[in-house]
Amino acid sequence: MKNESLLKGEGDRYLIDGIQEGDSEAFRQLVDRYSGRLTAYAARKLSGTGLDAEDAVQETFLGFLQSIDRLHQVRSLEAYLFRILQNKLVDLTGKRPEAHGLHRVPLLREDSQGGVEGYDPVARGGSPSSHARQDEAVQVRDRVLADILEEAISALKDEKNFRDLKILELLFYSSWRNRDIAAAVAVSEPTVTRTKATALEKLSRLAARHELFKESFTFPEAEESSSELLRAAWRENLISCVKRSTLGSYALGALEKEWKDYVTFHLETVGCETCAANLADLKTKGGVTTPGARERVFASSVGFLRKVRPGK
Image 1 (cartoon, rainbow, N blue to C red):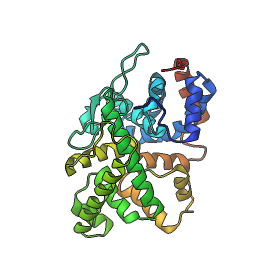
Image 2: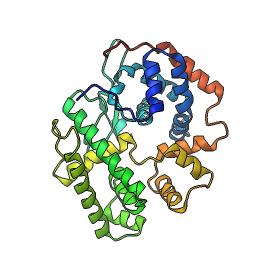
Image 3: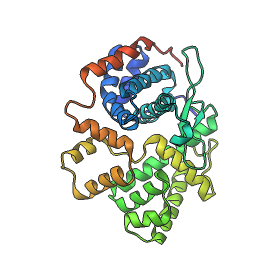
């Protein structure tokens, strides 16, 4: 697989290019852009523990800088930052990772900058999936799965086929049972089964035409295996998360009825904590974090900023 950036979004790529050149102002912009939503997420998770959400966010940006030369393996900067934060929260709370649905894998390679091992989110059953897995075949598999899921879910959103999207989200993201999904979406159990089978067939076709399909990847034939792999890829890449602009319109009550219904479902039934954190940040005047807090996060991490050598 080519060592090229998979990052989505021109704005994020621009920031990363600057940070990799050692530009402290680009790093400051990154902190300003993401610290609010990360702090909101950490505050929800640390509520009642007496631990400081700002500490977790500071550690998140520090961990980010320690892995800056490996961002070619990352497709979503937001998802990557939330993933690092989840690892830091496990460390801060001192809880066993299994309580968070996590297990230890090499998230960051050990290096001279003190790269650490972290925890990787996994679905029930323990299927492995990781941004930074050293085995190239696994990297190819993860990229293909993320690409085809993103294509399929984007199509459902474009078609406003929110019924099928809700079913698949509860199947692959939330691991609900068919009968519970049927009740939540107001459809029959056979409809849930049929929707899943149709989706797996479509994903198999999308995988077969992917540019990397012949590079050590085949779509799993066993339904359970494919479901576990898709679940891990979905969670890792925040596949169905709502755009921040859409959440902003939702907060203002400006979304059309179908979209409003889906966003409510995504937040309340699916229980997406990432989108809930984004929404909390948007609803707070001036953002969840204060200028002083953002400056503290920046100042505590910027000393670790370094220029990535060409070719790394």
